[in-house]
Structures are given as C-alpha cells and as structure tokens.
Amino acid sequence: MPSFSPAFVDELDRLFLWRRDVRHFEARPLPEGVLDLLLRQACQAPSVGLSQPWRFVRVASPGRRADIRAIFTGCNAAALAAQPEARAGLYARLKLAGLDDAPEQVAVFVDTQTQTGHGLGRATMPETLGYSAVLAVHTLWLAAAARGLGLGWVSILDAPAVAAALDVPQHWRLTAYLCIGYPRAPSDIPELERAGWEHRLPPGDVLLER
Amino acid sequence: MPSFSPAFVDELDRLFLWRRDVRHFEARPLPEGVLDLLLRQACQAPSVGLSQPWRFVRVASPGRRADIRAIFTGCNAAALAAQPEARAGLYARLKLAGLDDAPEQVAVFVDTQTQTGHGLGRATMPETLGYSAVLAVHTLWLAAAARGLGLGWVSILDAPAVAAALDVPQHWRLTAYLCIGYPRAPSDIPELERAGWEHRLPPGDVLLER
Image (tube, rainbow over all chains, first blue to last red; front, side, top):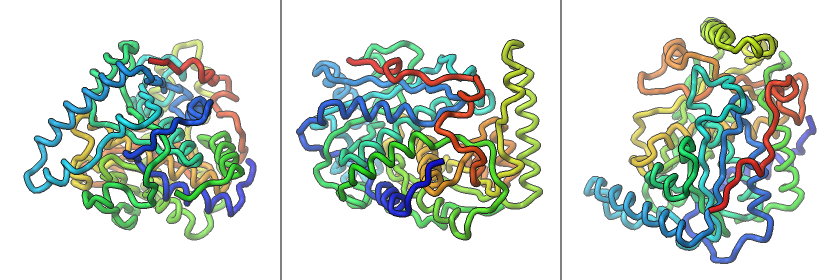
C-alpha cells in the first residue's frame, strides 16, 4: 500500500469537514470532462461481492428536468403539509433542492437484478446491494468537493415516478438524485444547522462498548 | 470553501484506488486513540435531514466476538451450500471475513427511531436513513485507509442475531460489521478480482444520458 503523508491525512479530514450537501449553486458549468471524471471515480467505490450495481443517468434535457422538478414540487408540498405546526414555518423557509440552478443533474439507480458479483455477500443482507450504490454516490461527492464542486442529494422525490420520467429499465431503483455545480456559499457548517433545523450530536452519544 | 491542491486531488484519487475491502490483517493493534479518531471522522458524514442515525458498537469482549464468529460461520455455511456447483469450489476458497485476526471490530447500526433531523427528507425515501449510516461507514473506511489501515465489511451475518448478541436497543438495525487493522497484503486490485470471482465493469457500461 502506498503510504499517505500526514499532510494528506490532515487535508482529507478537512475535506470531510467541508463536504456539504449543497442547495445553492452558481450557474457556471463544470469544466469539460469533469463530470465524466467524477463518474469514473464513483466506479472505484466498494460494492458487495464486487457487484458494482450503480447506474448513472445524466439528466440534461430540459423536458426531463422539468418532470423531475414537478415531482419534487409535489412531494415537497406534501412534506410541508405534514409538518407539525411549530416547525412548518421553518420548513417552508428551507431550500431543499437546487434543481433550478445546478448545471449538472445525475440520477443514481441500483440495478436490483444485476448478476455481477454472483450474489456474494448479499443472501443474508440484501440491502447491501443498495448500499453499494450509496458508496458510489459518496465517492463521487468527495471527488467533487476536492475539486471545489458542490453536490446536493435530493430525496424528497417519488422514486418510481423519477424512474418512469427517466425511462430506465424496470428493475432499476432510484438511490439518489444529485445536483452538481459550484457552491454559492461554501461553509463548514451544515445548512440545516445554520438554518436552526438541527444540530450535530457529540460523537460520544453514538458509541457503545461491548 | 478552502481550495484543495491538485496534488491533494491526485492523492485522493489514489486513495480511492487503493481503498480495499480487507480480509487479511496483521495482529498488531491500532495505535492508542486512532479508533476514536476514526469514529469522530465517521460522524462528519452527511445524513438525511442531519439525522446522524449511525450508532457504533466497539466489540472487544472475547465472548461477544465468539458469538459473532459463530453467526458468521453458520451464515457462510448456508451461503456455500446455496452456491451453484460450478462456483462452489471457488466460493469455498474465498476468505470472507477477518474475524479471527483483526485487532478491532466495530458493529454499525442505524437507529430506526431517531427523532434527530425531525424526519426531514425521508418521508418519500425512508431508506435514506439507513443510507446515512452507510455514508458514515465509508467515511470511516477512507479515513482508515489514509492512515494505512484496512477495513473489511462483513455482511454474511444474520443481522437480528448480531443485534441480539451485542445487546443493543430493539430499534437499532445492523448496517455493517467491520473488521479493522493493518492489512497483510495491500493491493490496488479487489481481492475478489484477484481470486477470479468477478471483474470490474467499464464505467461506460453503467451510464445513460437522458
């Protein structure tokens, strides 16, 4: 294994600290070839049994983007209506997607019927197939952040409706819908913390010894 | 956002390339404090609605480790029995856990009833709560690899049996069982590829445009 320098390790920790879920993007496009590079990095992610079940759909057509925007708008209105009264005002002020301004949009699916990996490691925990697509998303996210790019993971979506709008194979299930671009206001504090929605837990609160 | 140097970006890509799922560990322990540091880094992972649903259990007691080993042995025997005849010999030769030699073992759970995050972002895609714990595992994995440490994610386990063996709250669901230590034979090729189980897909095979 190549050794990584202490300076690299420090920078990696700084990357974890600054990697945000971004909702505000500049309009300027990504440099030529960068999205393809990020997708190639995503394919270096680990996967159960080397199943590599991630599937990426670059969504560029204005019509398809409008379909996704409409699905988000409907789901977000329903989520707002379901908020307890005390939090509805705060919820309404949150910006929960960057679908109007992000220059790139990528839908990530998991191929639930892939034969790659020959089922290894997922008989007992079949959810690890979907987890593998999540690992690809996170790899892409960090690769983007290291290049000064922001990524926003939109989950307020009707997953089957997104799959239908993008006309993907029946056995692909939506894992994530990603907005990618240059962030408008980078920060080392999560936007939901800055907005007063939630705060971060002390690490000691989530650890047991057995 | 702090800018990351081109040299850092190159090193990060190298980290993605060398980050392996490790099954062969040296016996030597982690330096004092390193596991706590890795767990703190894991808590920097993104999570849906800032829910931070990850829960970590450091498994140190020999009795608990023996219980986990027994669960793995049973599940792996069942998986071997279910292999098609043509692959059973290859399956039997794979090393699928490092439970006997890894100096550290950490079980990662998701708290399915956490109120943190106030449900934001997971009404439509509730699976994003489990995905958040996966993001913490991957953050820990990369932080470990940058420090020369290997991590093996064991999924050939009966998840409820592991939860019972570790005596965790009823609403915690197992996400991953991790072995951590110094890798015996680092490589930039996945062990399953070296063993002839599966090969990597060309990135072009997993990309559509819409």
